Image 1 (cartoon, rainbow, N blue to C red):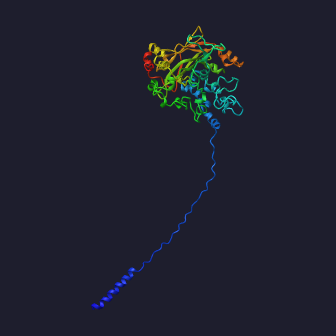
Image 2 (image 1 turned 30 degrees about the horizontal axis):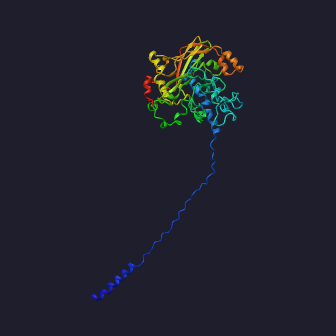
Image 3 (image 1 turned 120 degrees about the horizontal axis):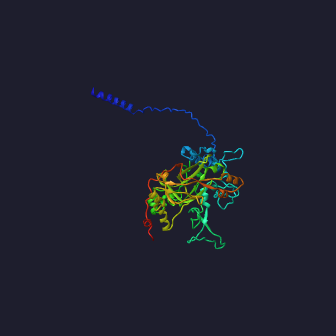
Length: 460
């Protein structure tokens, strides 16, 4: 039995081994094809609109600019903002002011559209970098550029006075023997030596597209619109470390120190404007520098505008506006004496002395004998919190408007009209004050003797 069992056991093992080594069937996956519908969009031709040319852009923006809307004048004049309309009762729309601006177009079919030639002289007189009526251009009736409307700047640019020597004697031309003249107002950017650096900049070198054509937005005043800044050409980090810069750079504007004067038109008579006369004052005053706080809280250069209006009954109404101001009378002091004098303008001020002693600052008063205003106070004049009581002014008015209007109709030029005008004393009180875009100064500059100021600039 044991011998017979062995073959059967071996046979079973062989069968099991055979099944274990037999190849296993392989499962081959069937590929699955997925079909997806894709929509392909063929790009359409794109029409690229070229940007407007400078002329097209200017034409589009000009109607909303200050030159186009005259909102600067309207904003200041309006009774809602404390302007002169509150005294006159005459709405701005009835004033002829807008006739000077670029939308005053009398060409048929173009009324109310921009009139480019009101600023731009023709190509013969205005290459690209000289779009301004300069004194050497003929006054032949063509458009006169920037200075035809900006009267204070015209005075700054062209006013002259006799040149005198150290003894006050006239200086004569060595060739012709004629008396020599010199500018009344000098500017470092504009005048040649010895009055400036001889750069010869004109208006458009500083006042670019946004200043002249606007930027498409509507503004109420130059004081809230984009404007030229000194730091555009003179970055703060490049300024010299003088005592003025280290002490005042954070609390004063550049012009508050470096401007020599503001041109103040005193005694403008609105009745003359209403009668069709050009705007001109009783006097153009130099030697004043008013100080206010601007919207950034810095001490800033300011100006005043005293004006007068007479009612149909002959009542004289007076008005004074106060506002920050941009002067083109910048000086760069080079000598020790000039630097000391710049500091003394604030820190040894006759106006501050008068305020401390009497509580008043007399800006103008009427000289009956001479029949004109006189101006006893010059230099830096801070606009204090009680300025309405402190500042004293006199107001003249025109007595022969009809005669001057008749002369204008005969073709007399403005200088002759001004000489023909007769002025009389109106009153020496202010009926209405206005201050916009500024605040009175919070404290007066400390006063120092000259020796203390000189200590900041030791002699070499």
